[in-house]
Image 1 (cartoon, rainbow, N blue to C red):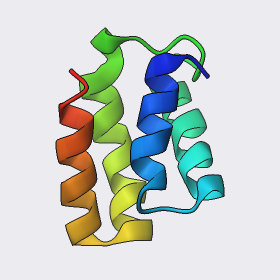
Image 2: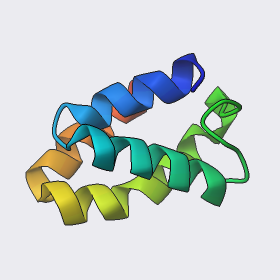
Image 3: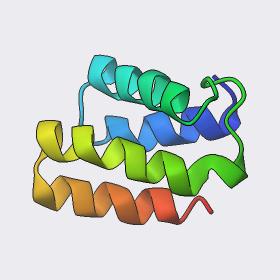
Image 4: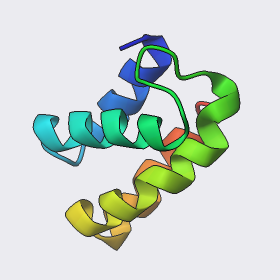
Length: 75
């Protein structure tokens, strides 16, 4: 996982389990045509949209809103 991928993982891991956070990062990077080693700043808008569904499902609405704010700050 590159630095950006690690940052995304750490944000998700504040609310979600390590396994869930890692799975979301890896799977949603694939959705945007990358992997956790090659994700770049320019991919963040699409990636944030992709991760919000699982975050909402596993973490709830309040957690999803907080995580979205933190992910937006990475831009």
